[in-house]
Length: 271
Image (cartoon, rainbow, N blue to C red):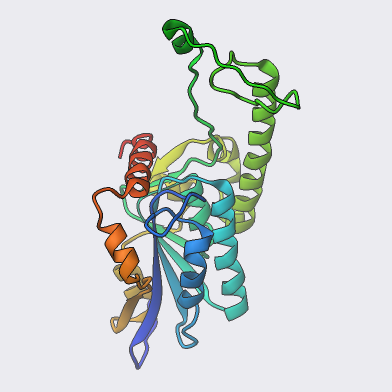
């Protein structure tokens, strides 16, 4: 159905977006952030002869702002360069990961890919009882009544919780409007309550809801679209000597924390 015949080799520039999405990126961090992806995205669209570009996505989500900035960069360059964008989901594209997937014109998944989780979450901890138990008194002085907003060492405050929920609803509305704009009539309008509830789905069920366009690997789909001579050209960042040394260090605390956070986020989806 998608097959097109080409008389020459066709190169499809491809960028892997894998990991948590976080503004806390550094020279050694693998977290997805606009500051370490901007040049790679520009390189992705640099081949004038390529009929399309591809994204390989494997992310449980993270920062909504970084998700938005990365997706916006992809969408704007796609318009400017008149390129089709195809997304291929591996294990998961949930929450911010799905935000990234929606930067593409078409989304393809595996039978077991986890898709969706269109919602906003703000996890945290409370240490009030712990402080009392060990006999520590915490003293905080502020010049604004809301400056200690959601302090984990204080009793929960209804006003703070209401304020947080209001912020979450604003971000959730932005997420909903973005998905509606990108997926349009592909979404099952009769299932909007489920789609935008924060739930997630696997494989063919995600396609039924309109969250994805089909099932297939990147090689299968690209061969069907552009012929057997299609070549997947991975766009990779060249690391400096310092980056290689630091990234291979056992004491790379940034990377350890990122991997730990990623594992916690993936556990929500049974991964």
